[in-house]
Image 1 (cartoon, rainbow, N blue to C red):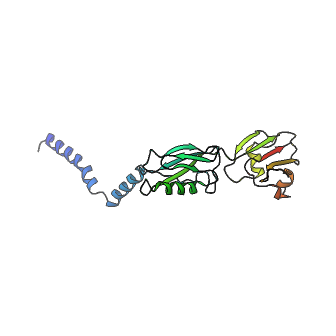
Image 2: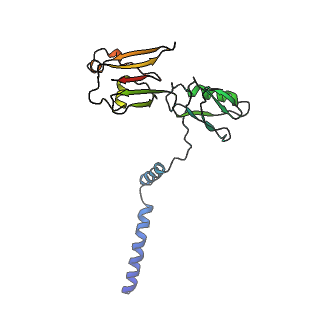
Image 3: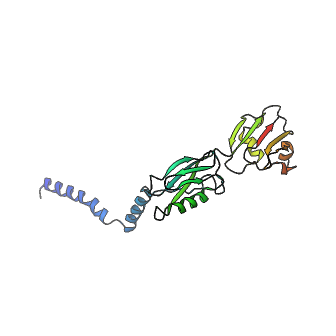
Length: 216
């Protein structure tokens, strides 16, 4: 056989070898590649969020902004504010009392009212903006102002959020101003130095909406 013919034959053999090796690859290696590809594939299923973004026990109040979604019913779904009378308006549903209810309770009521128009309605209520529950921190703190009360919080938590004390703050003479249900204003004393040392810890009360912490 001539030398050029031998060279061509060797070239063809060399090209065929990777194909043979690929066909003879262990089945478990192929399976691994398939699993890896599946893991890397994007999840295209629609994500649905329940109405507990502000906490399951959150009570809706005046000024809160609600995102109401009715599954596959875009004409009904919308973002609505809770009006000063505590109510909202939705197509087909009409007027609803939202203030004083949790998102789950409101979801259930909307579902009930929609059953006359929509077969098996799926409803989610999300508190998109919380504006109804706030507390204030005034006086000798680094960042005095009004803050949103979105979860259980104590006086110490509030002081930390407000950046801590400024120089010469009277840490023993802090107090909380609170409006009682009968309309009276309560003054709750708070001695920071005692509480952080483990004394009189009952003074570190959980805040309520519209409480004002004063740091002299």
